[in-house]
Length: 102
Image 1 (cartoon, rainbow, N blue to C red):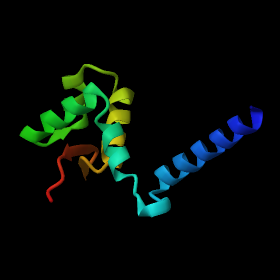
Image 2 (cartoon, helix red, strand yellow):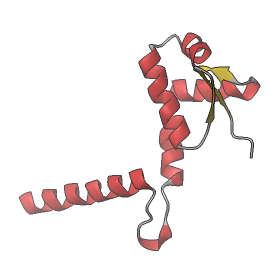
Image 3 (cartoon, rainbow, N blue to C red):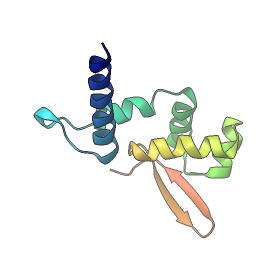
Image 4 (spheres, rainbow, N blue to C red):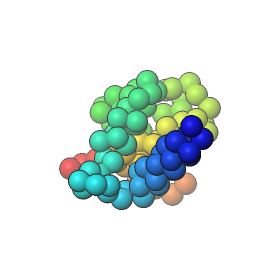
């Protein structure tokens, strides 16, 4: 039983490593789909995307809109950027987010 658990955890680590670095596994499957689904798995991230459909927003506006702490909002934005669902534009001290143009 112990060996089976170790093999399972080792495989999970390999999948996570491949997921983080965008590597493909057998069959050439990329983790774009999984990354997108994980990014859409939280209500606040979906709310961010809906707000960005209307216009470009800075981080402070998104934080106010969600009513969350700045660090929590930052984590949500990071996950959305990682999934390439949003893009950030830095202007001076401010970062503005929008949906990708393409």
